[in-house]
Image (tube, rainbow, N blue to C red; front, side, top):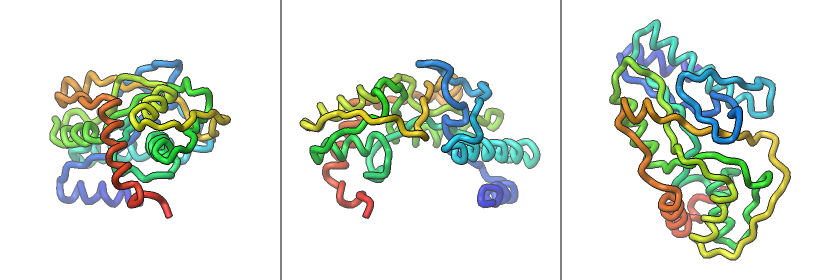
Length: 224
């Protein structure tokens, strides 16, 4: 209902509308290193433990596109791949913040699975820049992938965090969580050509910025 209310407001005031969707609309990749283009039709298990989130994003995209076609609003859909950066909530079950806070505190970094799971990590400032460019783009195109197109394994990310923090923490492995899924790589050709956008912050630089902020501000963002 809230989604439709905001779309109604956009139609009444002829406002540009941006929906922050997710790469999960594509479903799981067919194989390691699979690249998703905006025209790909995703396939999801609608009865899986995380289906409410994945299907919710898909349904919301349908609402946005319907209002775009029927009401004529300038609506954009940004399919955002894994994003990280300062100010993320700590101890909230998110991979990068959990790794960083555990490394700083000398606790084990827990990888669920064997560490070979591959995904991309895009720094938050790059995503914000991409979202702004989406809002200013040609109304003729509505859907854009936003994310980093250089894949990393979870193991590599964990090891980089240990190096950057100088931590003596261990990396340990536990059984995969039921709601964790493999993620593909975004095809960024449309964003590069139509938005003149590419991610410019590499993983090492982005992690260092996140670690520096977390070290200074961690007590402000820890869940009570």
